[in-house]
Image (cartoon, rainbow, N blue to C red; front, side, top):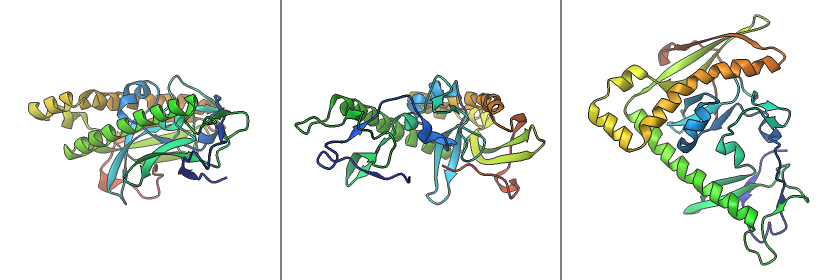
Length: 257
């Protein structure tokens, strides 16, 4: 059933309940998840963080790679998550925080399988937010604040021209080869060549640590290769390389949010 996020309404949704369990089946086809700066350090120890560009909106985003191809989440084994850290944008579901008029509002996916008669009530008999909903609202507020800071971080990285396209060359067990493109990462040489005052500015903004977290996370591509061993056609080898934005061959798969 298609996702249908609508503003959470205490009248319309007064009897709604949400199941609280460890099932992440809703994310089985999610190969990329938005990552926010306050979770970079945790995510970087488990999964790769890369930049992608929304060419239509002319904006860059930081995402975490959950799989090597679209529709593939290597961190899911059935309905359970394989790893110590889960992106906040996965944990927030079936809720989301989105612009609602001139402010941010809480939205809910009315078609979610997590809406259940046996779940946690969202509102009290008096129409107030339940303890469960209040905790989710706090989580969503923390996520929204982190995402706003992430946008400033990404804007600064782009302004300083620190990004370079990268390409992943995969060879599968059956001999098939694929290139995965459409991603960018921090160019360490460009970072080291920044003037001292710009490095200090990044440090004071809390962005320097985030930059190094992104750079270190690329090593977690090996984790995706390892997780692919549980698939029908495991990845046999992987090569990572920088690539000119103008020189990307056609016909290659491009990650998209």
